[in-house]
Image (cartoon, rainbow, N blue to C red; front, side):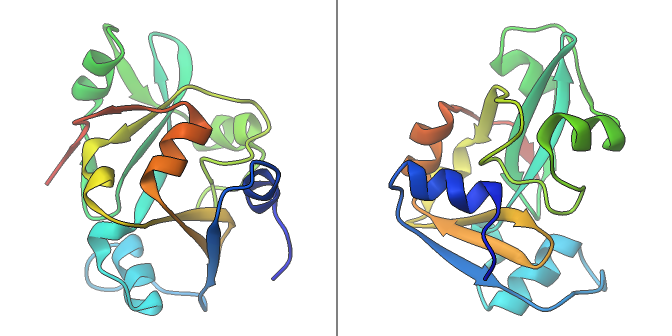
Length: 158
């Protein structure tokens, strides 16, 4: 496995993680994230996606289950803001240094505020992008929250 800014950030912080590589997956029935969970042989509830948003004009990262949907209203409320929108994909890539589909919450080019969905804490370990397509990293949710200084709130639905 080749190192990514995400895996290097985890190593520097001395966070225990397991890199989990998977072959290219096609979006079939269900979501791309659920296809990744299937390729890795893990429950979809343990796989989280990293979404770049704009909350009151400030770039922000939301970490939510792949099977759920980000509630922009709940995200704004969690940050005491009025409005949240999804960031333009090209803007998300410029901010993070990653390509869409491989955006990791770790090792981003610019440190952004992070809000993680509370369901993250229901699992012993969770998987998030490792910084490129085909790579997830498995970490303890408490380590993710601590390293990223993430707020935890109910921001996902369904």
